[in-house]
Image (tube, rainbow, N blue to C red; front, side, top):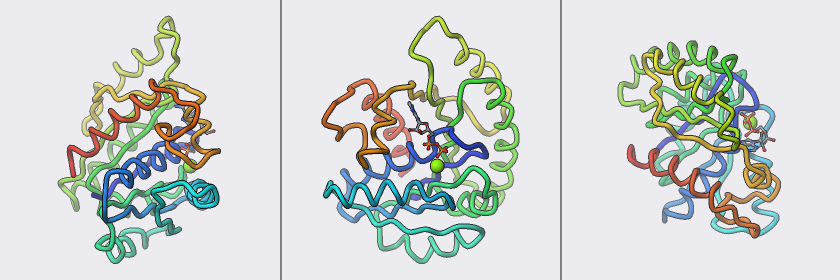
Length: 216
Ligand SMILES: Nc1ncnc2c1ncn2[C@@H]1O[C@H](COP(=O)(O)OP(=O)(O)O)[C@@H](O)[C@H]1O
Ligand SMILES: [Mg+2]
């Protein structure tokens, strides 16, 4: 399975989601996971460095590949692994387009504000282009940093907007704004491994994982 986590905006949770899911895949596979950091900022690589330094297992292989060579390089590497997870930076459209041509699943994380929802329109058209080469690409929207206060209706408003998109459909996958997700990056661990457990965060992530794995 090749999973790409991409959006054209920074701070939507691409690295959080890609690193967490990569660890979960590694926990559930024999053949290992390749984590590809396609963001020049290198946060996924940092996550994996912390994970290795702290000696957490299972360990993953992490490589940095940016720009339009993402697809060709990953095609060469992917047969050695059970799963490949690609964390694409917010700006590198070449890497994003390239990754979408070889991926089975594309996760598009977005924040429940109208401003972010608008950028999804462009993403929706990128998906259409990619599906011309890769008709099996399954796009999944994940709403991230959802307010835990039910009084705040931003999530419902974003849902209404998303209804009009052609290719990106809302499966109602949500991650709330939780300390556990922030701590995950600092510790180099997925939320289900943290010493200070947050079952809600782990449950939300598991729903995303299960949805991705339906396409394996
Ligand atoms: N669900 C969440 N709850 C709380 N903090 C989050 C959540 N998702 C991401 N973050 C934090 O938001 C920031 C941006 O997330 P990150 O995954 O680095 O985004 P991106 O890779 O898209 O730029 C990081 O500090 C991260 O720890
Ligand atoms: Mg990132």
